[in-house]
Amino acid sequence: MKKISLILPLLLAACSSSDEKTVTKLEAPAQLTVSAVPDVHTSALLRWKDNSEDESGYYVFAADPAASGTAQPVAQLPGGSESYLFENLTEGQSYLFGVQAFGADNTFSDRIYAAEPWTVVPPSDPKPDDPKPDDPKPDPNPVDPITFQWTEVTGLGLPAEVSVYKTEDKLNDRAFNAWYAVADPGEVDLRVLFPGKGVTRTLDQQAEAADGCLVLINGGIFGSTGEPIGFAICDGTQTPWREVPGDGYTEYVDKQAWGAVPNSAYNRLHPVSRGMFGVDREGLPGVYWSFTPSYGTVYVYDEPIPTEAGEAVHPEGSATYPCDAAGWTPYNALTCGPVLLKDGRCPINDKKNAAGYWMTNYELWADDIFGVDQRADRTAVGYTAEGKVILLICDGRITASQGATTLEMAAIMKGLGCVGALNLDGGGSTGMWAGGQHLNDLTGGNRPLVVTVGFFKK
Image (cartoon, helix red, strand yellow):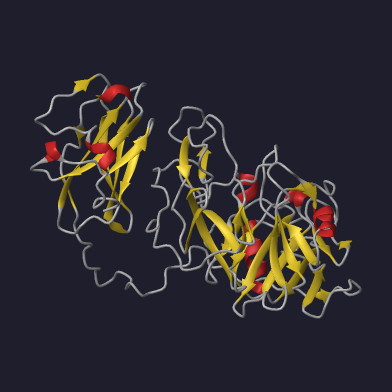
């Protein structure tokens, strides 16, 4: 169990046994529930309602059902908390999960426990018709690769290690213009640029100011005040993240409110895993989902937190949820989304739930971004099975090029040989600078950007 073996000596004086007298001044939490964590049978999620306005924090307990009054706290949480994820529980053991509010001057609420003990039951054996554990997971939306006739763009003064191509072939009978650049990160550097918190500069300005820039495209999505939605990692350093004042989670980047109807069941604050593309220190590229529980700690996963608008709020990401963290450490990387390809498969589709929300919009992007039915200027980055990186942009919303949907972008990246791909910012942010030239149409102007990514001389 998470921190079960760690006794917290500073808490012992504040948490009394059943034989000690305490002064109860705080209103106790209520509506305790315990729920299973999908695919992680050794974890359990405790939730409660915060009834007190004066608590300094909460203690959570995992007690022996026969001796709950003498249990020591497992963890200390900040005031206002309403959930805790117990991890690494012991199979076959029963626990009585509880919570207690504490305040100043050794004031406490009653210690409240769940109505029933929680027993950790091993997962049942799969039925004969169930997929075997080593069977590949089904592709939620098999996409056929889209291929074009690509013409190499010459006269850019780029080294032989970097190539740029353009197409004007139609996309599903629509006018379409697109460009892509390709290079091996073993031969050139792939770097992410971040001018600074709240600082925005155009794509051209960032490219021209950076030593050795060969090709640069726009990167992650950002807010009106310049905070990135997500974060980047530049030469091993994590950039600051967006803060949302007043949502109670200003210390987190990976929280997303969702729901157009105030105070409805669909208006909830979800932890979300952000799509990530990058390279490690050796230049090995990867596409993952990421979660940052606190600044400086970045978990990357091969699966997303299965968030769906209007459905249950899942636990935050951890070293073991939504799956074991992957053994890949980003050195230059950026977050955005949605993920278009992972291990050659497209994790998104065009299906909606009963409330009209996209079922595979795990990262909770707005419809005009996720947009499996929205055509727009788009930008994507990906890598091939041979480890080459591809930077792709397409124009949209003009007569010469009507843009692409996210599903079409996944199919185009697959047609270029990508096994992993990530959607980046689009619309007026979409742009490619190569060898001193801005290649695409400047619809919306050469917009100031927060994050960019591209190829650089080694």
